[in-house]
Length: 167
Image (tube, rainbow, N blue to C red):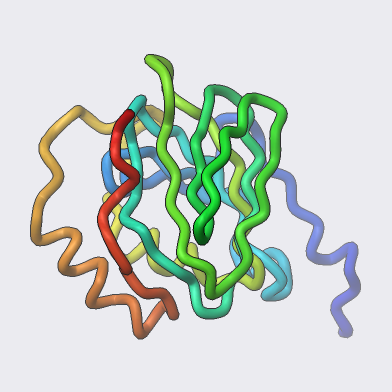
């Protein structure tokens, strides 16, 4: 029997999705490449105040960020800008980027990675979260960033520098 678009119908509730602790944040995978026919991965990220991933670039994937809660400062190429709740930022592939959660509250962000595949990195390096909440605050394992950089060729990204400096 031939698959139709309606055969791929999927719904994911508010507290559903595979949850991972990743670099001190919570990432809940809402849609995988299998779900979207390879078009995208959709994730919800909860990040604590001050969180910033290393400066990096994706070689294939574009990323779209929709800020649900909080304030996020993005650095994309040579530009820096703030996006608050209800705001959106598009980060094209091959352009170095990072972001930092501003203020004293966590940020909750929807992230689309287009095409799919980024969820493989989350599943590889993340730790399954026992609940949909931030991990306990602990110093970042220095070996984790080395392992992350080592996975760059497999997941088509490069670590290019440190996180965005705090203000």
